[in-house]
Image (cartoon, rainbow, N blue to C red; front, side, top):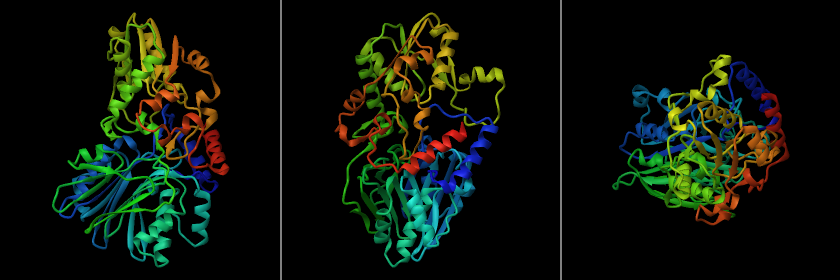
Length: 499
């Protein structure tokens, strides 16, 4: 994740200006930061297994990808900008030999879209090299960076991920073994972090004391036991690994030739999984709390229909993340579910500026309405969230131009009113539409006949878990890890420059 501290802001501002000149636009959704993957599997082609694991986690980040493998003391590394399928090929994977691999796929915030910031971060220590893959964001980056620079660390990237790796190297170089050195370094970190760390002896899987970002363990085969770490269970499924369990908040698992050992590195754990992982970020086929997220998202839709009914002819979801909730809404309301929008799944990020005419209908580059299905109908369109409202407004305009008689929008989460500082790329608070406008004002700006959000309690009740075990700070402002004012200010400064 990009560091939000003064030392890196100049670089961020320049990159932001370059992006504007290139015609880059902001997404109207929160964006996940990273997907991590690790495997300890002697005798297996760990590079190719990691490639497929990252392929399954591609939704968590599309800007860069990397794989590091360990062959004894030697580390083989390849990382670059682009999708997993663009960064790797058979020839590259063939050169990534070894029994241990660490992989990463990344979405970066504005200003950090550079190859040097791609992961895994590889750092030399007195015990050999480490390769670190990180999902999340530290909130004490300013303090940690100053500590590292005071001790003459040579930071070459603008990521907090490298800082974690450097902190581990410091502790190991001070005479600690891998386990003790890593634990000492972790105790210097505050914020959200799910880590996969490779060494020549084995791999570690680590979660912060709140478990804000997910991390799961799988097994591959029976004899000898081979272990896999991944951000989501879909990363296990694709390679035929069996789900074992999640890494617990504040836990470090150490996987070596002796098997899997568990250590509770933090004395204070309080489970606070990011609720947006369940609503939007994780793939619907991934399993959390013993069920697929598809099932949870359908329950969100059913609850939404109970809370906010409407008289309409058809209901459909914004592909792909709004579809399960739309199906649930249909089931509960009795309104027929249809496919009203077709998604072009081959549209990626582009730096080619569209013409003025294309900008007016730019939503159709990704979503095209089915005119004969929508014409003359009172439609309910279900989406998982609204951040700025730009895309939602254009989508509503498109539906009305297509001939929809009425457009009623239903959102399967509460209004997003606060920014995230734990590894999700969101706007500063003054750019979040629900932070400055009422639901009625938002409805007017979007041009819909009605707008309703799922209640905060409804969202949590649908989890069927302890509501206190989730981080929902983006809806409430109740941050489980306190955010330093300097971090808050730097996010706001960057936002103003980008705008």
